[in-house]
Amino acid sequence: QLQLVESGGGLVQPGGSLSLSCGVSGDTLDYYSIAWLRQAPGKERELVSCLDKFDGAITYADSVKGRFTASRGNAKNAVYLRMNNLNPDDTGVYYCAGDQYGWCGGDMYYWGKGTLVTVSS
Image (cartoon, rainbow, N blue to C red; front, side):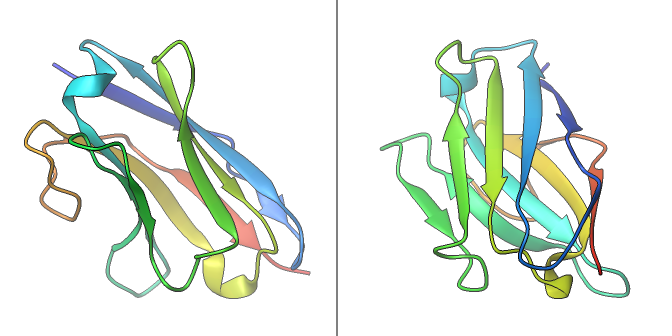
């Protein structure tokens, strides 16, 4: 049973940066593709990044490419999302999720409860 707990959300001004963490427990992280997803107010949940379990490649949504960086900690008990040059459209609840079969998207098996990121002046 993979357990995921997000942290690090908060209020940040446009142009600012914020780092999110996802604590991982219950299973070996390498068995899973790990994604960050977000849900903006009134909108559907969208995929932000995906770390592929098969080749370790990380992909990003076009809207965050070049600004966000996802990574795994060396201890393999956490994943991170560094967010730079934030804009109000980045506001939303951010989730980390894992899938043992390599899927990244809304149907992933394991989810954290989310952490709220608000970008506002």
